[in-house]
Length: 207
Ligand code: HEM
Image 1 (spheres, rainbow, N blue to C red):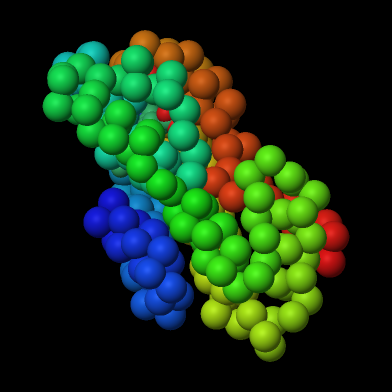
Image 2 (cartoon, rainbow, N blue to C red):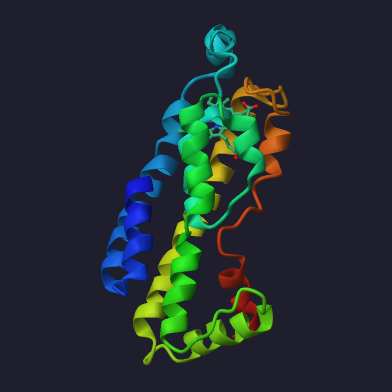
């Protein structure tokens, strides 16, 4: 996913939205697999899981550097996770690099700018106007419009994984704390409203 997301971003910067969308659709396909595999784990009863759960600690999904890299490159950068995560200098450097590099959203905004749809960083209203123009004139901006829909699908599928994962967690361990030291399902539920592209969701209310 990280490899494809990097290509999608670079292709948007190069002004090749069709190829960018092609690779983003591969990311969607991977996300569908990630969601579909969860019921396999749910065939395990909570009692069976408890038999080996203590051996997992302190290992946890919390340690996944790549999960944070996906969030960062997609457009949702939160430097607090670098402090919390980086167990090794190499991993810390990887996350620092992801924090510094442009995201898919930066590339998409650059692409829109180039089409005469300004996306200035500091002017939320101007950005909304551009996104509304994009959506209302699909004939003229068709590549960019379908790219924005593909970005939204990536966002939606990632959110679906979060929902699916927390339900599995509740099914397996209820309200027990996580092996990574968080409050478990309570923490995970607090992440459910995270979105990579809030402005694309918000746009719907203005059409
Ligand atoms: C019985 C199965 C599972 C249980 C009970 C479980 C439980 C948890 C819990 C409690 C957390 C919160 C952090 C902590 O304190 O540990 C967490 C986070 C996480 N888990 Fe799982 N998990 C399971 C399976 C999986 C699987 C199969 C994956 C990936 C394929 C995964 C990926 C993650 C990731 C990436 C996080 C970090 C999420 C975030 O911070 O938003 N987990 N998990």
